[in-house]
Length: 428
Image (cartoon, rainbow, N blue to C red; front, side, top):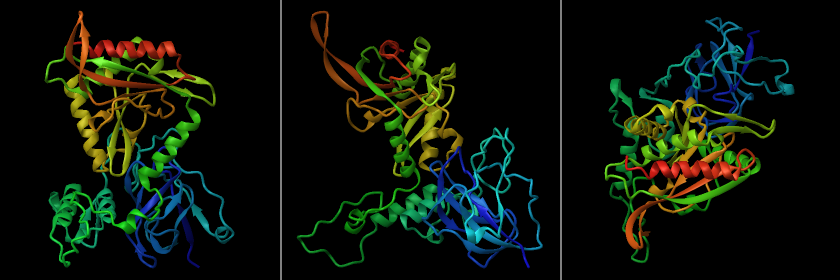
């Protein structure tokens, strides 16, 4: 009798609790080969391909596209063939805690992907993954003659687009995220083939995003991917952080016209962290320990249609304005394309949100543990400011600093904010 094995969902990131099935590359009954295409999974951090862990026949799947599978739970069952198999002790760079087997699975051999204790999670699954300091590229999945990385496939599926009908602009005929977005824009801007609506009807304005129908708007839907993780993170912050917010205006009247606001905010955060290290820290509430950091890694909040991402601008203390701008632009473009390495969405020691690019003056931004502080910048404005007994029109930037009062005193936070304001007041 052929041997059966169950493949359980491994941890696709740093302790991620689950992942959503985007698309199966094979169907039940199909033959698979070791490390061949199996399924695309979406986590809070990325869309990644899981390769087949065995050679054989796929005899059962434990979820369809859109289903959420918890880490360590069954994903697929295989009947092994005489083809090449991975050695039992060979790891793929990912670990998970195995869930207890059900009675139906008790007689079935189970497989886990165990990594050595000192292995570093590579953050993506492409064949047999080894730990490396290099950023790994997503493998292009060729399915049905269409070439696209998992993130592009996921976006096309979400927008209801047929990849086979999209013209590829990438090398070797690969469909890019830009190709998908152009196809979506072309679809929404194309003239309708239906009859004209009655005069009393309201025609929604055309946008670059698919229109939301009344049925969609009125139907409850489960949170997916990043939005689900964002909800969890906010709930965690609400229960674990004791937040207090200080608000103040930065006077930018000395700035020259060509100043980069984001770069100046990053520089000011570095100066403030030097003056008051207590806010460039992590706090472990469970063990009542605080870790002060010598390097300043800034989590930049990036808004997207998928939800809020916080990308790590590493070693801000070593960067000049040009380096900050280049890195922030790279992080943003890769977040929007869902191509950012998952490791770049963690490890920050301070947080920055520039919500003022949209609207608003002050806020009570949320600190995501283990960080203890976040700075939020509102919309800059021209305000009447008293100067030497007269009134002058000067540029003002509203700032809000939220800190975890368990880890920082009010005095430490105020000194941090004062140092930040002093740096922003400089002409250059």
